[in-house]
Amino acid sequence: MKIVILNGSPKGNVSVTMQYVHFIQKKNEQHEFKILNISQRIKAIEKNKPLFDEIIDEIQSADGVLWAFPVYFLLVPSGYKRFIELIWERGAITIFQGKYCASLSTSIHFFDHIAHNYINGICDDLKMKYVEGFSADMYDLMQEKQRKQLILFAKHLLGAIEKNSATPTYYQPLVQNSFKYVPQKTYNRVDVGDKKISIITDSTDRDTNLGQMIHQMNRIFGEKVEIIDLNEITIMNGCLGCIQCGYDNSCIYGKKDDFIDFFNAKVKDADILVFAGSIRDRYLSSRWKMFLDRSFFHNHKPIMANKQLGFIISGPLCQLPDLKQALQGFYEVQQASVINFVTDEYADSEKIDILLHNLANQLLEYAEEGYTKPVSFLGLGGKKIFRDNIYGRLRFPFIADHKAYKENGLYDFPQKEYKNRIINTLMIVMSKIPQVRKEIYSKRMKTEMIKPLQEIVKKANARQ
Image (cartoon, rainbow, N blue to C red):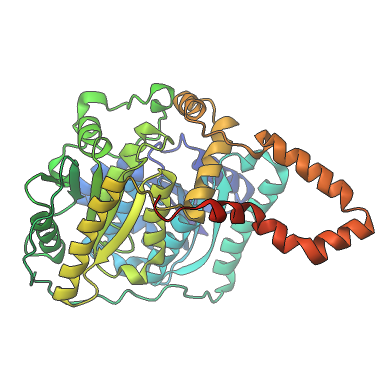
């Protein structure tokens, strides 16, 4: 059989992900594995239609497709995302129909499920036969147990092709809305004071719902707001995954394009940010993905701390909970205050006006109060994954991260809670005595749990 590997790593064959693929090749030499470097060559693929057609021809002649990629910012790299967009733009959808496929990723398991769900959804949209996904830690290949699991994963894909196995469809086609948003209300401009506000978008076209929503938001905020179209920023390419920035946050692109200066001046220095974009396939555009990937030059530091962040989305966001989770989760880890999402899917211009006005007021009010919304599991869980990896195996090459984590108290390991450790030890010993254990669990547990909180409530003063 012939299996085409669509390589999503911008590093080509010199990537962690491809080592997993090479291992599968070695274990299945009776089959042909054709590796196509997608992300690394995306600029050429985009400009050179015959090169794109060659890739499509390889896929057409294959018995199966393996989508293999590193996880970049909770999804596939921007070049891979652009290739997926090209499939639709250039009418190559039918080539994928009926092909067996699977997905393979490498990462530190930071929201890797969203990347696999995205690829699964794309495969369902293409009417492919998606077998399963395999999400590997970067160095799982070093462990015999994980190597065995990888061998079985490949066996499942090859076996499904040989047996012509039935596969489930997990994601239904998105239902698009033809509603045209036309602003109905003209609100008095809110007083932004000395707050620096940036609206960042991938389109300001007033003939689109997104463009109209941005225009309405701008009218509410007034003259002090800056609207930045990502298409007008010179960005040479997506993140290369070289990790040169790990030492001192210096990006390999440097002054070769405008991204670093733009990001530091318009994003990092803003008090309030509004990110606006239209849904393309099952995510925002590849241009937005490039923005996210390139911002990695700050590595894992929470550079959005205390910023107020709102989203304006055109498209069926309610049908894409993974997209909302990705945006909310990532910026919670970044310690931003994620306020709300406004979309055009309500199909009611007056309601959208009200929601945009409310969002603008919330952003300003929270910024003035210094209010930061509490993080959910998304932000807390993600923070701990970064904390543990930067303290441990990723301390090198991410030297800049390690320094920042130490300086900002982000190494908040529970081992340092000495008081709690002593109390826990004593209580565990005492609970071995039957009478004491009965007293604690049957009579005192509930009241003891709330006792420290009751003390705070008791001391509270309504005027404070």
